[in-house]
Amino acid sequence: MTLASTPTEVPVELVHSKSIIVIHPGSFNLRIGRASDLNPVTTLHAIARRRLPSGFIYKDSFLSERAETTPVQELEDARLAVSHTLQSCLQSDGRRRYATPPQQIAAFNRRSEPELLNNSGGEWVKPEGDIVIGNDILRLDPRQDFNVHFPYKRGDLNIHSEPGGSLTSVMADLETIWTYILETNFQISQKDLKYHRAVLVIPDVYNRTYLRELMYLLLSRMGFGSCFLVQDHVVATFGSGLSYACVIDVGDQKTSVSCVEDGICHPNTRVRLDYGGGDITQIFYWLLQKCAFPYKECSDQNKLDTMLLRKLKEDFCHVNLDICGSQEKSFVLRQPGMPVYQYTIQVGDECIVAPLSLFSPELFAITGPKLIHTQKISTGDPEDPHDEIYLRDIRRKGMKESMDTANADLLSDSFLDGQQNNPGEDDIVVDAMDPVVPASIREFVTNPGQILSLDQAVLQSIDRCPNEEIKRKMYGCILVVGGGMKFSGIGTWLQNRISLQIPYLYRAEQLDIVTNPRDMDPSMIAWKGACIMSCLETAHELWIQAEEWEKFGVRIMRERAPFTW
Image (cartoon, rainbow, N blue to C red):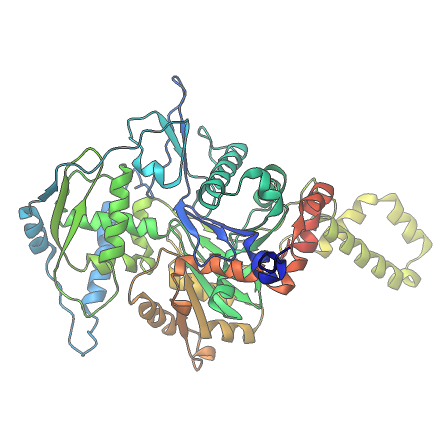
């Protein structure tokens, strides 16, 4: 054996990290890569399957869909309220802000004519097989008979009653997508996955049934040698180098908030809201339409138009109060089978109003009602004989036995006889000892019919921390991650909104909003944090081997999961 081929030449840590695959699935994008990689592969988290000649038509939308009955007057009132707030703000030099009337901007946009740049925007992709995965779906001719499925929606599995909406179908889609990406981008065939380990980033508000199925998918169906699951907010703190933070994660279709301390995400503080960057895109599109958007054929049902709208939002939107009046912008429209045009448009405060919908969530009514999701108490698992219900019953029995022992000398024989003749009373006493819902769990509060704003979600989340010291720490460090809130200046706006509402007891603390930790892309922070965590020496206790899963099943999650199972 030559010196060059000795295994000591490559550090053990590097070999270790090269065999770890970190998977961060989202509602719109999938981020996946080796733990040793600098950045993940980011691709559209979707699959298109060819429809049978007489099959049902089903296509998930690429953008949060507008509600069928959009409350136009309510939206207009909410828009005016935000506009009035902006007009009352000052610029950094102390001068009052001014705004160009929408009618003036609309007049310019109506006169704007597109400039022809090229006669063809390319060709549609002609698929060879029956399945198209990832970004290739964007180049798939919409006239082709394909159904499009996104396995995740609003931050969790996309379970619905339409074709392809069962848990089994969603798991099959995930297996196909992830296996294809690993083979295509990393040259790892499925038969070699047994030599690799997987880290799956899961939501902070999770469904135990879904997690069990995902573990089964990774270890039994895909065939990874071992794996572990970790919450997105926990790894966000690892990726940011923070030991504690109130984490705000704004994705494409959800916004989640929770308080993390020393790798533990406090259960009572977790909340997930059904709005995100895609909803902001839809609001921005509505605002552009009010200003006579010159690309009149634009449709939120056309997948390439939705990608254009996302890009316009990312390029144009901001929360910089020093930018006043109308700004002239241009964009290029390039789609297969169509000429390439360049449009010139004017935009005003629409670019600020759209991002500020996070603080004036009445605007989110454009995409329908919004639910608030919190961590639910376990309802038990038939595969886990030592689940929470069993442990709660054992604790009750232990408490009852200790009470019986203490009171034995006070009880007469006749009383004991009476107890034995009435076994029903025994159950009543036991159940009364421990209510099913602990009193410490409080629901997040909104007025009837209203949507919880981002600043209110943060304040209510911190208020649910177990003690005053943790609350004080969380008010001092708020971490913003995810790809849905990447607007310049929004951190300052969030800081001002929260500092005005912090309880008097904590106001002396320094309020620090971290929006670009380590100068990294906020949408990759959680993925990077999972890479760091998986390579730590202490992480070896978390790995669940395929053989262990085969033997013990979901029961092993209670011992190994880095969160309360």
